[in-house]
Amino acid sequence: MADNKKINVGGQAVIEGVMMRSPDAVAIAVRRPDGKIALKKHDYKGFTKRYKFFNLPFIRGGVILIESMVWGIKALNFSSEIAMQEENSKKEKSKGSSSLMLAFTVLFAFAAGIGLFFFVPLLIAEATGVQSGVAFNLIDGAARLLIFLAYLGLISLWKEIKRIFEYHGAEHKSIFAYENALPLTVESAKPFKTFHPRCGTSFLLIVVIVSVVVFTFFGRPHTIADRLIRFLAIPVIGGISYEITRLSGSKYGKKLAGFLTAPGLWLQRITTKEPDDSQLETAIAALKCSLNIEQDDNPDIVVVE
Image (cartoon, rainbow, N blue to C red; front, side, top):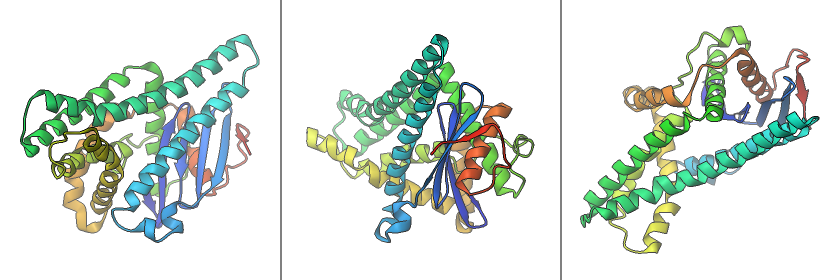
């Protein structure tokens, strides 16, 4: 997500924590019920770094998208494990079970989102009776965009999801501090906005827009196989969207960047919230760990092997 001194850093909010990814490592920091930060690091080089084929244009985007999904699920599992490990009383057991249930609910919401974004729009387009392939896919795309916006708006009303969005804001603030070569402290990160131009939310919006263009070439689906082919095209759409995002961040894509990031920044008013100091501290711990920066002997950090 961020680019400083030729080092790319990506972040992702999880339940009561943040996952940060650098070219050589993935770090997950989770706030435990007792207030301490559980920190776990994985030395990891992505497929695009290990294999030249997977780093080819239009292929690397799909690979990175799949890797992000896998690491996101691992981060959710780690968050739930930490909550369960802290069960020392009936009250804490209830809290741990709630966190575990939340993890499963978020995963279910993700699966449901795939169905909503790629199959429900098809049903809506088919209900119109339109036979033209172009018109059909335009209706399909418009329905997908409206469902996407409604989906984000609805889940943002959920208290637990709001906490995740606050960690999302903490992730952005800490990366802004890093990009501006400031000390990685709560005080340095706090003044920055929660909106980041290269956020995953902006990427998802580009994916929705690109899908409209790509599916236009598929024509009007008539069989189950036609619908499955659309689903299998998701990595291709992700690859194209990644290249557009990459171009928008280059010196040759300044105008394109302004056009593409504006809707994404607006959308982040939903997907990011102002974090508190403890959430910023958690995000900074994950960022430092992913970059192999010393944690300054913070007594509140517990390293998990």
